[in-house]
Length: 335
Image 1 (cartoon, rainbow, N blue to C red):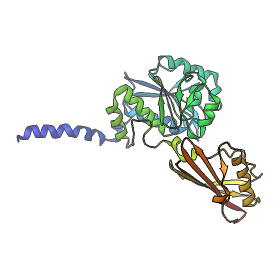
Image 2 (image 1 turned 90 degrees about the vertical axis):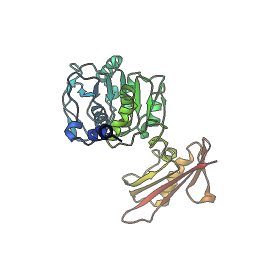
Image 3 (image 1 turned 120 degrees about the vertical axis):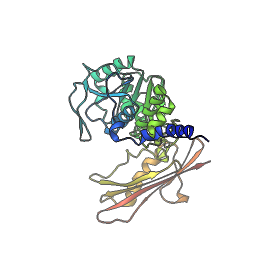
Image 4 (image 1 turned 180 degrees about the vertical axis):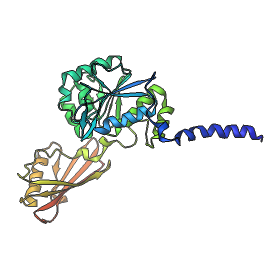
């Protein structure tokens, strides 16, 4: 075989490898002059850093021009991280992609100036992405009425109750309604941003960006790690338990998968363990669908939902140094 064609093919195959191994400076944010696609990320006090930093990295790596904007253009703080935006609402340019991150959104979702800005800029934007609890802010604009959406796993039920015109989903990492895309919590904002890159520049570009970021991205929003599909979604709401006054709680762990979930919490209180477990049982017993099964042991509960059998058991450890551990174990199986 002649050497020249072989060398040509070798050089051609090396191009993407060289690009991936290029110095960090070459992988950084591209110049803002004559951008192909402009991205604007809305910031506010209380914003969650990963909600905007994740998509920022994705879009910058894709070659988009990325800028941040706040109401007055002054610094905003979230989790102690201070950021100085590029623009204010008054002087912000037109954006092709508008990103609405989450965080502490109690005030932002009722901020008329913020809502008006997002509603106005969404008209000319090609894509509007909300991340995590940023869905609340986007929902307040009425842009999600009659559509599907998702959000941070712990806010799924509250979002559905607060905005009943929206069909809230917990079985996907993001929901695409065409122009509007809503993502689940935190790092799923990167997955949704990659989805938008795929829509605007092609699937191969999105896969290349994910590879460069060393991020295991799945183009299917229902594939991979879907936090809302984990088994803890079946745990009843225990916020109404008559927790002892002055008690101190420390989470030890809360983990599992789609078929099983375990929780262990340390509680410092003078209330005896069995008395506390009795209070928990009182609330579970008032929750529709749950039935006590004393034959299976104390504090054992069973529920059948959507063809699945859910078994839930509460337990406590020995009293030590003014407190004790309280645990919950949940198992999911077919009927």
